[in-house]
Image (cartoon, rainbow, N blue to C red; front, side):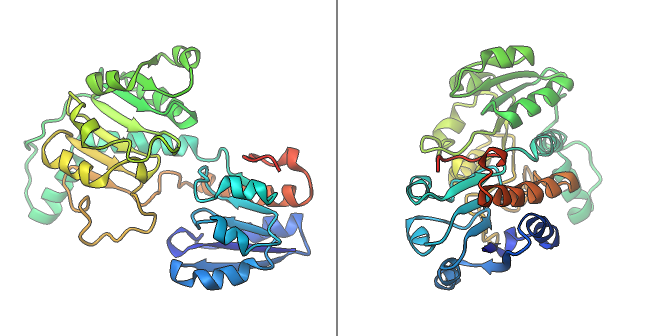
Length: 328
């Protein structure tokens, strides 16, 4: 039994000791290899897949070609909640289980969302820039903040994270409206949230936050067309997937004042080239490096659950896998 722990350098854990500990506890005889991946080394990665039985990754693209180089692969454990990096039909065809971590950082991502919203609403980045870079001590700047109290938050994607954000926002005295492809009216009513169509969010929201799962219908979901429909010049937040947003259009919306600010935890590329990026070095935009999940508690849960998923799947204990997204 060989287990391969592999990802891009930026996505690798600072230490894999805890993961190896969990894996060895469940599969004491397993051979475990940690391999730093890059697209330039894909051929070398294919060689390593040849005798791999279980792969632990978050962002390596496991398409049909990659799976063809993994004849012994039984399970792909994703140490993230998304699994769009895997060709799910092809994995299912080959009886390879795909196991993302279903729940480990809901509260952390919600906290991060609210933190970005408050920081942008209170112009914290602008004040910090003026003080540290320009040595200007002046509270009165062009974008005068308004109280969060009674502002309207519009949420796209009313899943676990969207609901947690709604709870926090309601605690701050905000009105919350939400949109989801599923019928979640009953759940929303319990939280004091109104379910509406996307157009109504564009019309009413002072803050818009995206928490949608990535699907075929929401790549480039937010383009200049959608931004121009946002009537109240909102703060725009994205805690979901970077490819849900057309980044050039977002830059244009900020340049034209359509949005009063933006907070992003993701960009369209998981390993972005930041020098010269159109969204970097803006006073009213805060970008964090896909860090919303990051807390001591979430970090440990993510590592433990993703490794336990491998152990349970390999042992045939599929009922104990935290989340298995295909039938194999």
